[in-house]
Image 1 (tube, one colour):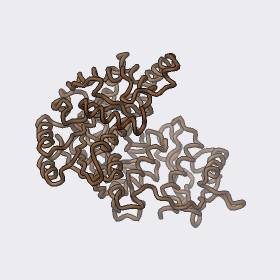
Image 2 (cartoon, helix red, strand yellow):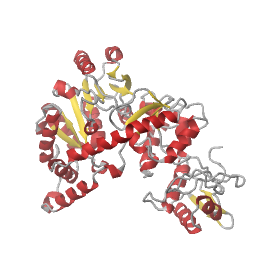
Image 3 (cartoon, helix red, strand yellow):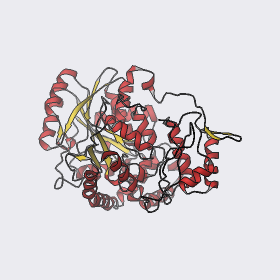
Image 4 (tube, rainbow, N blue to C red):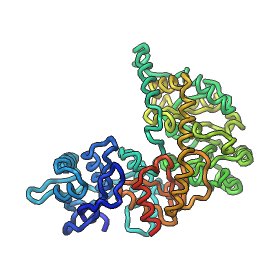
Length: 516
């Protein structure tokens, strides 16, 4: 029963993975006990055992898998079940008490503290953002929505336990290059680091981006480029500038889920265009454009999220034709640009290269390949639109982080970034085929094996909302298919990140759930 699972019993040691504590076998611990499996404790994760216990218990309480008033396992029972010391459990329980998750009752033990019900997002209080909330799947479980997934992504769960995440493992990124660039920037004139930057962005970075875009056959002078705090801010700025409440925005279906809620909050009507292996369903795009007269169409041309497919040249010309016919702007999100190996491996056409920024607003960034924490992205568009977007940025945030932009410029200008991107693509290539075969062995269906990128859009053959709920009970974060559609209907699909599928516990969970 959700919220009152049995307490963990003593382990048997079976199925033990190297570097992990034994997986506990749950056993009853009395009426109302709150002690189901809290997930494996990873001895080599870089996170202390105390913090792992705190994070896991807190997550289950936040997700209402542990109800207020439920009794926690005794210190001795918890320590025995997870092969940790009683001191570790006491320290973890004390932290949970201090942060309001548990309460200690003298002579009785530790209990989940009753917490006031709080709305997770605006979807709980208004119809305007109703598309954010996934439809119930028939299971007696908490609905899954975009905020739920993003909140869990930012809980600092170990990366190896997040197969639904959208980032590469930290060890794949070039932390040394970032550190060296930070040191170099810190040695510059201190006055440069203490003042506002330029609203349109650090000029040397924009000049460097001009060269980068030229390699993609996109001509953009520095005055056509505006820096942003990642592609997320870029999408928000463009939507705010070019739409008004009641306007329609087209997105791919499936597509990156975070923008659905952002656009709905602006009062826009978000409509999905079916995404096929080589791009959008052109017939459907034409029908819906004639009916709804959209202001914007947001599209991943290269390494589409979540399928890692790319746009064909034929589809690209047809999209541009419909854009002109129905007078809508195309917003091309190319955040995965540097993970694409080139058209020799996977044919791909960028709309901005064909259109040269006439009807296309091109977005890029470095959060996926350099460092998410830098939050440096950019917009490339016509001079007139760049001026308007630069003014909007100035009125909303004044400037973006000049320090972060200087760091990105330093990394790009020194020439090592190209080799770093090659290494990342090589690592993905080295594990992709093996990971796809393993997915099929545990019961996942892969329609079209992508030859590039980090994502695979798989069919689990069951409601992935319910599967995600069960995965969270094992401290594994999945990304169910319902989140990737504006309709948010239950789906058998889910997005998996091949770079985040190396943890044996993930495969054990999927095999148990899908082959039973």
